[in-house]
Image (cartoon, rainbow over all chains, first blue to last red; front, side):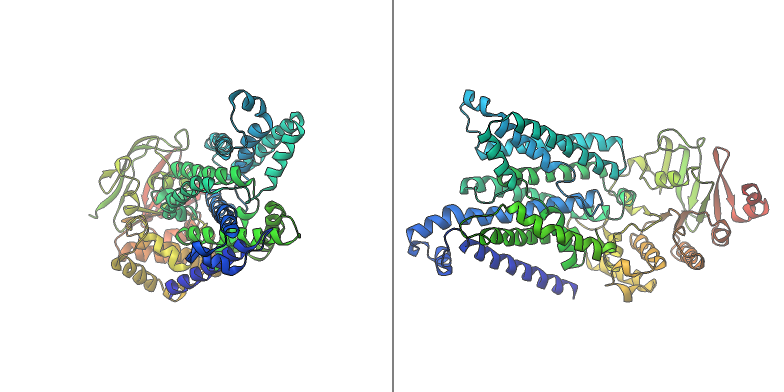
Amino acid sequence: MGRVNLSIKFAVITLALIVLLYIDLITGFVKIPFSEILKYIFAPESVSEDYYLLIKEFRFPRVIVAILAGASLSVSGLLMQTIFRNPLAGPYVLGVSSGASLGVALVVLGGTGVAIKTGLNINSHIILLIAAGLGSTVVLSVVLAISSRVRDILSVLITGILIAGVVSSIVNILQYFATDVNVKSFIVWTMGSLHSVSNKDISILFPLIFITTIFIYIFSKRLNLLLGGENFAISMGVKLKSLRILSFITVSILTGAITAYCGPIGFIGIAVPHIARWIFNTSDHFVLIPASVILGGVFILAGDILSCSFIENGILPINAITAILGAPFIIWIVVKNKRTMV
Amino acid sequence: MNELFLHTKALEFGYKKALTAPVSLDASAGEIICVIGRNGVGKSALLNTLSGILPLLSGTIFLNNSELQKIKSTERPKIVSFVPSKPEFLLNLTVYELAAMGRYPYTNIFDNKLHTDTKIIEEVLLDYDLYKFKERPLWSLSDGEKQRVMICRAVIQQTPIIIFDEPTAFLDYYIRPKLLRDLKNLSIEKNKCIIFSSHDIEISLRFCTKIWYFNNNTIETYSTEEFINKNILSDLA
């Protein structure tokens, strides 16, 4: 009985994802007729050239990266909530996102001189990806080093918040000394966007995120045991230290990659795992990981559709939308569901 | 003579330095052992060390005649299971899901349960009268029922040794004897070795067969009758 129920729920959220994906494909500066999308899928040669180009080079990468971003941030949030056994943990709390921001800030704000000397294009996504990845890894290493000294999980969380504070101060100082143009392009990046990603970027992002997510899915059993407390998990044969390190690496890859390409996108990481727990009524990672992937996609696509629909000829920053949608939801969860938080 | 399940040789345990002098302890099938001592004396540290959670400082622990340090961490949960004092299980799991975790040491990486696994889970849930609750989330149960689900999980794990850290600490005074009776039945019917710590000395004495008593930097072993007859309790007061 339970299994049938599970399949129905997965079918419903997958359907929601597909519907939103279609809506997002036709939404934007130019409205694309729904029939053209169907034609693009089933008979690409019959689509008019303009639409073909628009769908292939802009819309398609946009929806794919949206789903990848939703999935990555949600899985990161889920992992952090489990590892820290804190319902309000997310990639932000531990400073992972700000670490990635620091990497990007160093490149965008401080890299002009280097770029002129070396001839590198500093706005190239690959360089941002590496910088963001390094940034989040540095922050996570610091948190890890501290967490191996203090066993207590709350202290680690507070450490993460403090490190995030230090990092954002460094970013402020960098902004102070940077040129106007660089500051502007950095600030635009911090607002988050799903619209500046190309097919070439996706050919890097997709395999990276896909493999990382599959990798952590294999650890579902161990993550489940962690829900029963650290001592219980160890008594069941979990190697706590390596599980923590693996989860941190996963989080820093997923969050770092998405942050580099789309800017820091908030609230998805905290909210979606709760929505998944609420819909599926379980804490089982075998269910929650795929559910977070799909629901993360659903919510970020919804956000993207909204961000394109509010003003006539413009696109609102996705970060603002996710915050407006996400924050009240988290408050609702906290008030309503105290006992079933993780 | 019952089969010796657990045996320590000059064991020193603690977080950084040893909490007692080297101790030698024995625990056999069918025994139910109560660990008694003042707060902070190291009861939890001892139980954590015996369950392999806390690395021992020196000496050896033999579980089922093999040395604890040489048992692979994935094999250890087939020999000893551990029940923490408060089921921290956060609480969206159903009774069945939690009970089924007892099969984790036996299932593959994706937790595909064989027919025998599901049969064991269902039988034990029926035994403990929890089968009717199997789809209920844990948070909807009383503290006593939650603790029973934790016991179920340990039974389903099918280990010869089960270690409980303060199983009665968070329970209503009136249901404590019921829980201890469950443990006693388990040791008798399934021939398991049960080790638990408690502050409820009087209730525990009614059910246990042996006492490990933390006293003056060492752990003394008494049979329950000895412990009562020597009137050791009066020293405690």
